[in-house]
Length: 406
Image (cartoon, rainbow, N blue to C red; front, side, top):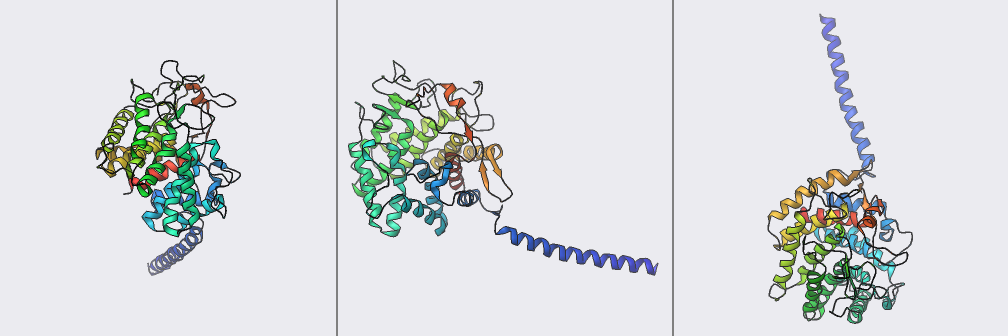
């Protein structure tokens, strides 16, 4: 019996020692690994931002770019970094933005390879980053570029009704994503530097969308409208393009919630824009999947080959959450956003061994017209390739995370 107890005592002590040292070894290993692994206990916003920093040390590399470019996609993702910097005061997020901008401009305050004569409305979107950069650094180059981009809008060609052309090469065409590219920048500029003198013009761009690009049957938006009805993709009666594109709805809703940030409540058009947001929020909520996500071709979930798409879903989630947080939408939209966000994580988010967040199945960039000609049919959108970590998918998830964490 004595021998049996001694054996048990010795074995017990060995087990305790193994547990103690084993835990030390495990803790040591974890400490060594943690230098390269993004902690799982961080919020989704920071996990996503740290993943982007790891995958794309230079922001121009986003979306698989192989050379620096002044690009709306970088502007979209970096707008999330700006919000995260304002939330955390972590300089690495600000530095990431500044390094991108400084790499894209020269010493005299010009954007490299920018040509105003192209009248590409996409070029305005990265310009939003310069307002905060100028306020923080007082670098006069940023202010110069803000002014040059505002000058582009001053001479931007317009449709007969007064809507901004999307580009010089697309005459008389308003594209729904153009509202996001231009109006938040335009609104911030006019409130900050012009005492709000252009707010009516900004509201007019949304009014034209409501009149010509919103589908009267579904209340959702087409991708584009040709006022001249001359381009081959345009409906001969309405001038709209053929497809209600999920990401297009996202662009429009984000344009509304971000433009409203700068609209004074006292302005007569403030309630009009809030009404537009409520209208499309109510309508798009009717077209989500059972899990609360949105489709590539938004109004035809039953269409063969249709699929739920992360950039569309993330943008709509962000707009729901921000709209509720700001009081533009009913508070119930915050809980809708949260449920959809949880489904987004299950459906689209893959966390790898390094703890990096990856967004699956992001639709590639799509457009209309051009060479070769893009006809904008449902099948065109459904056959466009998808890829992992498309910049708009990453940016939408980052923005939605930040807003839901408030």
